[in-house]
Image 1 (tube, helix red, strand yellow):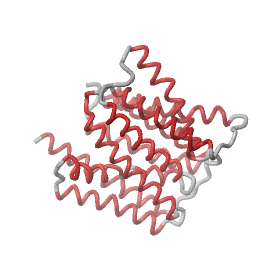
Image 2 (cartoon, one colour):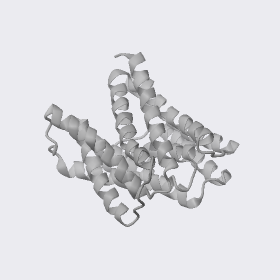
Image 3 (tube, helix red, strand yellow):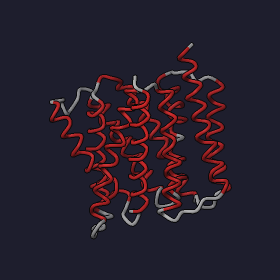
Length: 282
């Protein structure tokens, strides 16, 4: 374990995802499907290259689960990209992080796992943050909130599918399936909503996949090098960075209740991480 390197890689990961999300918000003149297409296609160059170079079987062995993960993940991505058309970047990123609540519910229903009563309290705190954001922040319309919440539901289901796959597939094989399916879905959807990029937009759209891939790569390295309880909370810096990008570069405005709601969402989830780590140490 190398905690310093793990922190370094997680910070790089959050910055890469922040740049990607900032570009997504900047490019909302294009449809969500078109952005999904470019984001996924860009990552495919890296995932295919890695698998071919390492001579790892591209098709994997648990193909039904891999396809299901790709379909569910692609649905979540499309919905989240749509939500960015309606709401501030920081709020959208923060709301997306309630996915662990839905993952816990799916784990109970599908995997028969148990959740301690105090964990439900933490989830209530997080979900109350959602209500604060919607009720007191007029920058969040109902359509945007609905899209990001449904995206979080599908994201929570992704966690369960990946847990079901476990270590039986190489992580890059899982990501490659996801990117392949997302490229197809984004490409088909973009046919009906295509807007030809002009000038620097070609570069910006192509950069989505680069930032997305390296964000995923650095995050994987961070978790490989450091303990989860020390590294996972740093992931939530992405919300902080997203707010900064939104205010400075995108001209977004936030009210005090925006920060209260985001703090409740992140605080409840961090408490849940802390509690789960305490259980593991007993």
